[in-house]
Amino acid sequence: MEDVLDVYHIPYDPDYPMVCMDESSKQLIGEVRKPIKSKPGCVKKVDDEYVRYGVVEIFMEVEPLAGKRHVAVTERRTRKDWAEQIKQMLDERYPDARKVRLVMDNLNTHGVASLYEAFSPMEARRLAERLEIHYTPKHGSWLNMAEIELSVLKGQCLDRRIADMSTMQTEVAAWEADRNSSAKKIDWQFTTTDARIKLKRLYPNL
Image 1 (tube, rainbow, N blue to C red):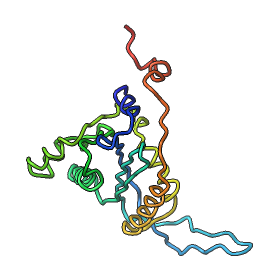
Image 2 (image 1 turned 90 degrees about the horizontal axis):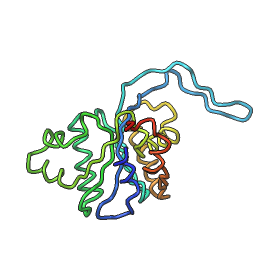
Image 3 (image 1 turned 120 degrees about the horizontal axis):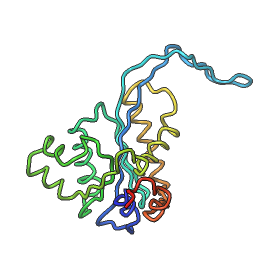
Image 4 (image 1 turned 180 degrees about the vertical axis):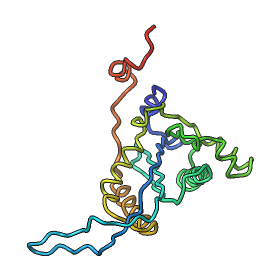
């Protein structure tokens, strides 16, 4: 926990950007009956019945100090899917960074081994050398600032029924562009000192 909190308070450095990554799933849901649009004196009517079209995965990546985020909607979240997101992040969004300080939870797909499963040893090593990974502790996912962005995304963009992945990708891309244009940053206030006081019960008694 303290490792992550210390990383959060390192001053902004474009050569070593701090990026938080998290994943979530979202059900694709369609309408059985077409909703009736609202009109003067009559609210919009939506039938309670719906149809499920499967589940998609959401990869959220946010750089809190720069006010930038990237969201990918995919069919799966396997080791190879995670590795592809890492490659895109390093080569397309941070090509000039010496290293990316990456904060994420300790999911079994979130590791250098996934890079070796997806790419050649030379390519996997190249990518791994540009990562400085910091894991949130078990039961401490609230420390990941990407969770905040996922919550905003679900509240502002994914709070309705979306039936297919292509529509969701289009909607999410529009949300991402709008949020990035306003450069919304996250002002993280919780410090290691705060943790030692407020979460004292989590520390061993010596």
